[in-house]
Length: 238
Ligand code: UDP
Image (cartoon, rainbow, N blue to C red):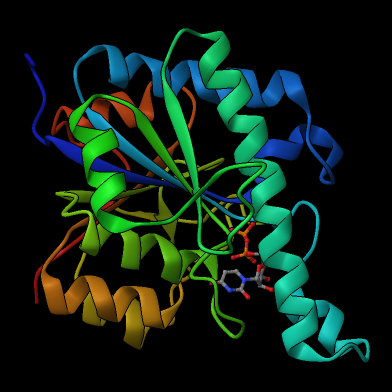
């Protein structure tokens, strides 16, 4: 397990990451590119649990703003994350890695139910645990699911892999002069309302002292993060 700073990581991918340039749906080529980055750290011996969003297919909050019942819309959002999880499972298995999708909403023909002890066992055996259906509850997000699963599966770090290099003072896609933070405390993120993860997720990580690293999902960002290199933005401490 040479060169790894962490033994077990929770990697959060947003649903949009899977859509590629199309911004909607699942682009198989994009999914396989992301999975190649994840495969690199698996081959180094890192135990990986993944939480994938669903925003590329359905977002509960925006649909409820258009008149849908919030809980119904959120359940649809959670089902969207299962589609993404199965797409990632397929891509990782094509690269030769054993995976299990564990869903917070039971769907036994498609995937296993999420059972913490089972998830831990899979991780110990070197299988990638893909946590689907968020927390299983409406009014939450997959960021919160990532923090929650990260805590219960005793991950040493939460990696939020994004299309940009880290956390900026303003949107780097729209502002050329955006400045990236290298280090932030949890309180900084909450007070400055920085868009790292939502406040429930940040609070959970803060209470349990689990660092969050925001890095680029390409260019070897995930690998550098788990090796403890100075990459992206790290959120930790008081
Ligand atoms: N969702 C939910 N409970 C959860 C996780 C997700 O209700 O525990 C729903 C919510 O409607 C959300 C959607 O699933 O909008 C997709 O997740 P999210 O927006 O977090 O995905 P991302 O932005 O990461 O793609």
